[in-house]
Amino acid sequence: MNIINNASLKSFNTFGIDAKAQSYCDVTSINKLKEILKEHYSNPLFILGGGSNMLLTKNIEALVLHINLKGIEIVSETESTVIIKAMAGENWHNFVLWCLKHNYGGIENLSLIPGNIGTAPIQNIGAYGVELKDVFHSCEAINIKNQNSRTFLKSECNFGYRESIFKQDLKGQYIITSVTIELTKNTHQLHTDYGVIKNELDINRIKKPTIQDISNAIIAIRQSKLPDPKEIGNSGSFFKNPIISAEEFAVLHQNFPEVPSYKISEDKIKVPAGWLIEKAGFKGKRFNDYGVHNKQALVLVNYGNATGKEIFELAQLIQKTIKRLFNITIETEVNII
Image (cartoon, rainbow, N blue to C red; front, side, top):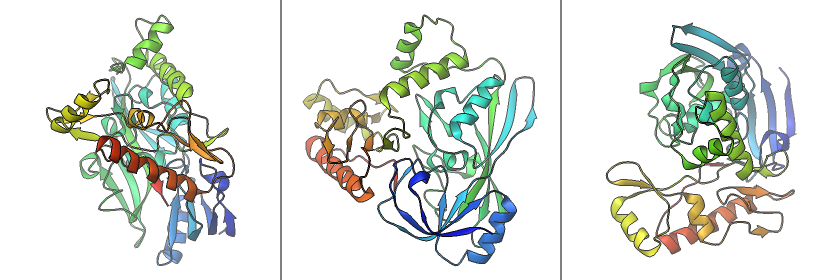
């Protein structure tokens, strides 16, 4: 078992933070995972996936297990649907492209979301009107303490907006090893409600879009707004879009009539966090080697050698300012380590 001591995690997190791991192990099989858990479960462990949804503010005084399990297989299919199992170490966007290649529909709106398959259920990833829970069938996970395998059905995962049981009641107790989803093979249900999607399709003169057209539109939109982590360190959207009551929104709208919004229910309104941050004057602001991206205020960036602590302090400043100006609490979507 190859365990590396004092390993740099700079290449394993999309912020490019040069934190160190006390020790590091690349996990490429379930048997290897169970073996190392059996030996080290009582010691401090840190589970690492694609490194796209975390901000490292310190060195990791633990054994870092990098879940690098690979493989995609069709579990079953009918004339209209297909159930696909993907291992936790598969890159999410590459998996989306694989599904599109086979004309499997349902996750095209989730194109270009960074990260790996195994962390997708934890965060209940979502974008442009679609969430993982919409196609989720089940996932397999291993109990860290006793190494027993368990299958979690959709009904057991308590999915919410960027939430799941793996972030709440079962946080730190299981390692997801694979995810199984159900997609359509024909008669795809397209989600084009977001104006930016319609605009992108119009620009390309597409009136009857396919799932590939939707994916291409999403990729173009995201690339126009979000920096490539390979060029500028970032973790995509740093904050969740706040959901407030209709009464709270009425007050906000009275003070800021131009505020965009999305109705969730009769009493719940979603407000874009990016709009709030931009309105507060943070968009494009740079502080030494870190700052807020100039095209998308939701994205905090590392221009080179920033520390995680510096970026976290910026996030806290933004949160305090939004609370002061709008009386709205915005929560981080990124995990602060």
